[in-house]
Image (tube, rainbow, N blue to C red; front, side, top):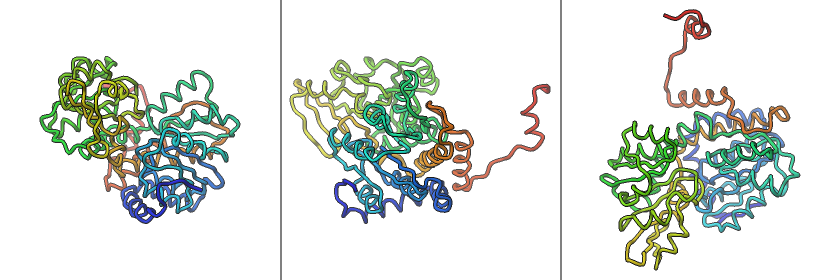
Length: 414
């Protein structure tokens, strides 16, 4: 059972998936082991993830481990329709297509839950929330969460005492956020902006809202493209870090008249509001790299506009009553997936290796894991790092016996 744009696209999806798998050596190593050991035999997995070629590689790895996998998209604009078609042809129950309505989005989540789920995998925590609100009778072993926004939501659920099963915060693994959030989003955000606009970034003033790992990655790579970068923040420590990293830091109210391109990366709502857009220069471009489409107040932008013109897919021109133009990318949704393809496969190799191993950990430790938001076990995190280095033909030092003993003692100093 599936619902995709066009099942006839499956052959091209196969080609896309093979390309991704050639650049995901760690995950492919896990798949080979899964095929032999079948650690997920008989396990039902319901997942809401961006349906990209990299996610396809993960879904097939879980299937190779013996799992029954059902997949829905975590963003109406991020599904790669040819990949979805191929996965459906390979026995994955996929309910995802590019251009879903909000109702389609939630209906698809219901589809992947209605026959039960042992493991719930999510990117943003909408599926976890749906389980807790409308599928309370499901006997879920545990879940995983891919992104910062989802982890934050789940922590609130834990604090309020409503979390019904353990969830491993894959986002918190070093081999996830240091590379996926920072390097992956940094590159893919620029990729999305360039695909939508073909803009010259050199010499432009880029305003990056938020200096978490995603904001750090975007700011550093924008500077590498020759842009002048301004950072806005609400956290004094992160703001200080941005200053020490060499960026200008100021409130959005002061940055709004200066920016040529604005990129939000905070995970919060109303970061760019009406008062900011009124101050922006003619031709300002708005993009979002936060998980949900709430960071730019698109409804306010519409109310301010007398006309909206679709320039090309992912690029809309809003004409104000005074004639000023503001451009919005990807409808205010994730620009790196709405107008591009998301993170490079090499980065997602680590993120999805963590996902696969976290699922295996939950299954092997059924009933032994606390109902909390948990970090990826350290041995899994270090294994993924070691395997990634190995696939890159990078060797590192090992501590000598003397060094190992030295770091375990406290008596010897200078």
